[in-house]
Length: 231
Image (cartoon, one colour):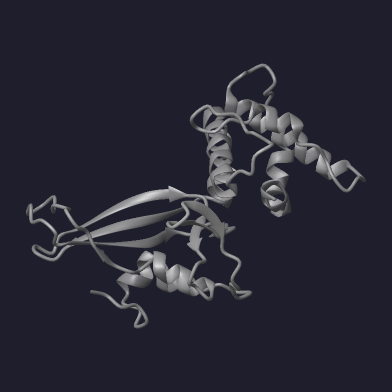
């Protein structure tokens, strides 16, 4: 499913198909994965069959801990997607090519820490490739976004870096950089704490044809969107 969605992104597909730096002589994982992905996309581009094999790609792919891809086990699509983007980005940075991963898919968010005692604010920016959105007990994508972004939480045991006060710092997560193509990952698997088994959430989940993310961004938060409740 990840391959199909990436292939459907025209700019991404074009960049992969036209990547022309020789990769075959290296055994580095990021090189072999890019070479295998390009081969796979060309098969998808040229075939008249309703399917193509991803055997070459699967034999070359490894997760960050060095564990190979086990095609006999169901894998987490979001974890696979993130690792794939990391490998492609590493390869593009290494050869000095225009990094289309950064240009097309990469986004970022900010964790903002605010001390109620001294009023100091500290922002920590992190890169990401997709939005991880909870589905359980949420009717639509806006409820999911609200639960992850712009909702403040008081951090227990956290000491302010400026004044040293304990348990007086709140944290809020805000979107900073939005990508050209936004990838959303729905967390449909949740841990059942009674059985300690992962269970799939099959409830209805609604999303619009056009998604307005302004109120969940750093700028929307700072400009005082009236729909955002601040502590």
